[in-house]
Image (tube, rainbow, N blue to C red):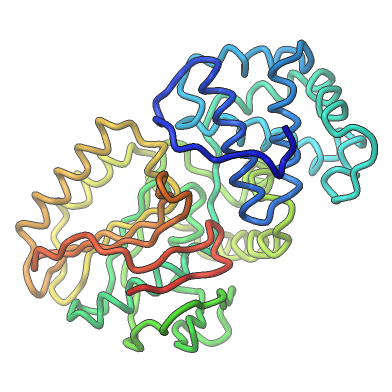
Length: 363
C-alpha cells in the first residue's frame, strides 16, 4: 500500500488487537498526508509496512503486541516521536536525508535499522502519550473569546486549561493575532499569529486574560533542555515555523513560567471550579487535542461537573467551555463552544488545521 492510497477509516477509539494496530497506523498515514506532512506520513507508512515483517527489534515487537488501544493511545505518534528525537539529537545519521525530505534508498529499511540499533533510546517513547503543545492552536481560542464577548459575556477571562503539557497556550495573553483582519493582543508580542482565514471575520470585540492556570498528568518544563527536546520531537518536521514558535515559547517560559498543576483533568477542575469567581469575569475551560487521551469515565465526569457548575453560573459570573478537538467522523478538527447561564447549546464555530495554519469560520 502506498501513501497515496492510505484510507482514513472511522473506528472505535478503544479497539484493541492486531487489526486495530494496523488501522491506527494506516489512519495516521492518511491523516499526515491530508495535512501536508509527507515526511511524517512516510515514517508512519514505513512503520505500517514493518508490522508484517520481523524487522524493527524490540520496539516493533512491542508495537505488534500492543495491549492497549492503539488509536486512543496515539501509538504511531509515540514511535514517530522517538525516531524524530533520534534525528534531532544527531544519534542516527542515516535518518537525516529522510527528515530533510531528500530520502534516498528504501526509507522502510532505514527506519528498521534505526529501530534495531537504538532500542534503549526508543522503547521509553512507547510508555506515554505524545506531547503536542502547539501555540498556533491558540488562534482558535482567541476567536472563540471574541465570539463569547460578542454574545454578552464579560471580556475578562479566567482560563482553566486541561492537558496543558508545557503551558504554551496558557501564555497567550502575551501573543497577538490577526484573525481575518481582526487584530487582538499586545504590540511587540513574543509571538504573532495570522492563520489563513476562511469565511467572514470574527466579531471585533476585545478581551483580556486576567488569570491562566492549567494541569497535566505529566507537565513539561520548557526550561529543561531534555524536556524541551521531547516537545520538539513531536513537532512534525514539515512545519518549520513551529520550531520558531517553540523557541519563542521557551523564552516566554524563562521570563514567566506558566502555572501548571500535576493533576488529572477532573481533579484539577473540581478544585478550580470551587474557587470563588470574581464578578465581571468569564471562567472558561479550554483544551486542544487532549480529549481523546482522557479515559471515557473521566470525560463523562467532566461533562457532568461542567453542567452542574454551569447551572449555578450567573450573568456576571458566567462559565464557558471552548475546545479544539478532532471530529472522528469528519477527520477534521473543530472549534466548539458552550456557555452558561443561558443554556447555550454546544456550537461549532469553526473547523481548523490541527496546528493552526488555517481557520474556516462558521461562527
